[in-house]
Image (cartoon, rainbow, N blue to C red; front, top):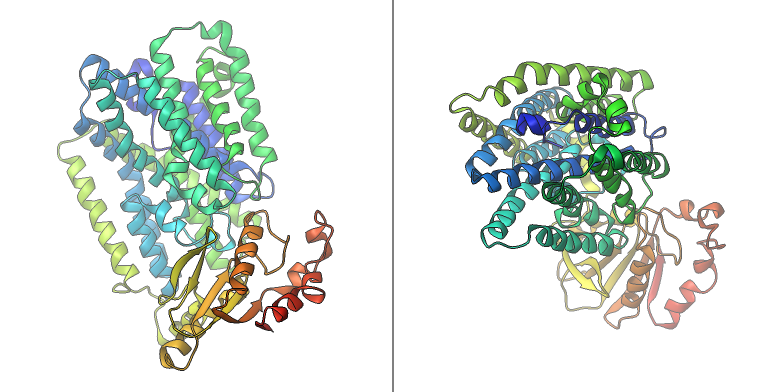
Length: 534
């Protein structure tokens, strides 16, 4: 995403690749602004990944063949390319956040700024919630997860290619092997651990490596792209279109579905600059112009949309969203024209060091806000009480420890007595902080607890959301927990009305409530456990 073909040697520049960037950024921006219209637009990020892998690997191989590759030069280019726009957006987001965010929101923004400047946003967000969860819309720097993936790739990949090249290994075999490992990880965890699959670099590197494979193959052979590239480009564009208009937020992604946009992008690049699609559609001046500013546009659009969502207290009106997109487009052009071009194409002495120092300064500011050393404008005792009340249900509490049972992860507190099992969805999780407080004040008198909870997963068999396809696995594990001799009481809690709607379970032809009305509680009574419905 952060790459530009313009930073490669001039003979390597392809206008159609900037046009492909335009397809990617337009799909992402459209999805964020109008998700009901372009439900699969988030796959634009996957297109960026392929482009990045292709260009970076091409540049590295070019340098190695000529004996001119330098790690210092490579990473200096990365800093000059990535930092100017990113620093600008982070500073503006930080200042705007100081004016409009509450204390807990500003604290979270600080954490995300620190994660963004250290390129670990994907790990920070992974620890919080899923990309498609409702609360994601109130995170102005949510989109930096993809930048984290790319930078982590840049830390590992050049070194791996360099070592393989020096030891005269087959570079394509290296690429293919790492690609296969990453793809298997992706397929293995997308269903049981969708949030991990989305944010983990190990389940995402294969997408960049598709571009890398294409770069290796392109460097080894010369094909007549005019003769053979037309069908490749047409098929690639068709695959991307299917992904944009068929996938939605409930699709198990990345998984197998990510093959559509990634191989589609690879086919378009492989088609060559002279194929019909590339020459007539992607290389036209409008698409190229959008593609050139795609990186700053990506950085600007989401903070504006997210802050609008926060200020409006919900999804902004269509007109506000459209204005935010137009403003982000103008800011992207200004950023490119007056900042990026001066830093990237007229690199001055000490500019890399200066950018790193500024980036570190912003990192420190983020840490300061995260640790509440720096507080926002709207910081007073009355608002603090409201914020505290709103955040009082945060889960898991700090004293709860993670443990694994039947390949599922739950939370518990330690103790010698028989435990109380709290089993349910996020509505049950809200009791966690209160229970932690009771335990801390009466540690000797209160039994240990186990929380077998997951948002969207009720304690009902065969009832689940597409966002949480592993609900049945967690149900089975929690049920086994309930029958353990060290569990004395089972407490059920859930957003019950949601799961009693018949159409939610039409595929299973069952009402979730039947479990409790008929055999559910009886099973636990037979086992000797007490049952409470919360």
